[in-house]
Amino acid sequence: MMEIAYQPRIDSEIESLVERINPPRVCVDNDSDPECTLVKVDSANKYGILLDMVQVFADLDLVISKSYISSDGEWFMDVFHVTDQLGNKLTDRSLILYIQQAICSSRTGGITKEMQSNLKREVQQRHVCTEHTAFEITGINRPGLLSEISAVLSDIGCHVTAAVAWTHHERAAMVIYLEDGFNGGPIIDPIRKAQVKDHLDTVMEAHHIVGDESRVVVRIVEAKGAPVGWAHTERRLHELMYAEGDYESCSDCDCFSGDRCDALWRGRCERIHVAIEACNGYSMVNVKCRDRPKLLFDTVCALKELQFVVFHAVAGAKGSTAEQEYFIRKKNGCTLETEVQRERLRHCLVAAISRRASRGLKLEIRTENKMGLLSEVTRVVRENGLSITRAEMSTQGDIAVGSFYVTDVNGGETDPNAVEAVVRELGGAVVSAVKAVGMMPMRMGSTSDSVELRDKTKSSIGRMIWSKLERLSSSIKSL
Image (cartoon, rainbow, N blue to C red):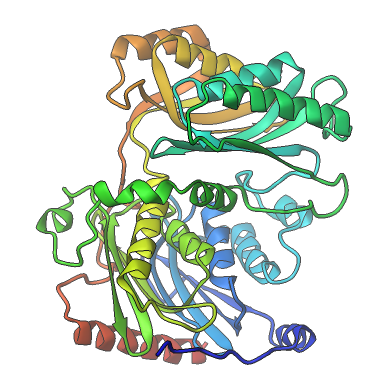
């Protein structure tokens, strides 16, 4: 007989009252750990709050070396061990204040321009800008696709102010922010928007493949207030890739075994290991892979997309190897009962982790902002026989900055002569060209604060997690 889980009905006004009475408390502790800043958060629980908090750190390009998460019931208590990209503790008062405000505001109205102006550094553009119109493009990937799209936009007078493109398992997803190059500002005229969409549809259908369901979606952004369909760019890219079914091809390329992989622990295994089993009323998910920036964000994003609630979790890294362990249930309270359900989650987690894996050569661009810049850069890359696997570009006033990961057209190593030609043709726009590695370690130096990773049986895993959570609860109560 199928087990049915019943959830209590919670009135939205009562839930809002609880949040107002118990706003998040964020403590930034630079004394307890000699190498990391501890960010401790406790508050009334709310679905999705974990991803919102992790997103704050990801947008600031901060490194989460360890995290302890407990959100069973109506309260959550989380601790994050955080450093900057160089492994330093967070000492900038404006940054600390921003983190505290951003985590609290994630429950209410989002990050305001005033909060960003008080921060003495740039926050990477991760959200829809109210001055621009956002276009979402998904479909089957092919060499030169981004070049074709940007060329068409330039031809019809659209200025690309920001763009993020991911490719994975022959699928492509892009979020491109435009302003009307003729008039400036967002593209408001419905006829003009329809014209842009028609041109993009033509590009996507130019090399139509049977079964391809490429599509262009226009997300309208209001000139004032919050945008309609507001979404965090990287979260939206995960959603678009998931909708494209890129996870369906993961079964042949990665290892889902929960067994120990000696090559992984020695830092030489590029595969992603995901094991799922039942444990004390939860589905326990264990992820092991090479460490890299934003790994926690990507895995939590995948769980949220699949409507899972994280009740307890421990995540950390030892050297170049990361391990994350989650105790989860579906939003309706059910656990994963069948192997089909578990296999789908394994595939989705592998896909979420590997989408951001950057192989090939990374070209860093910094140059004067101008109409058609993205078209020029991508054209030069394409004409020299290279293919873009991932790209991110944004404008900061009169300056445009971006990063482009390139391979040959078959996804292999780049030809040094082709790279030299690209750098020569783009002149001083290329500030660096370095080889990218799929799963780079998140931090260098000491690993004395890393989570101790070792072989565990099902029972020992449970005891270890619960003991950590008990210590976490005690430490937060003592704040």
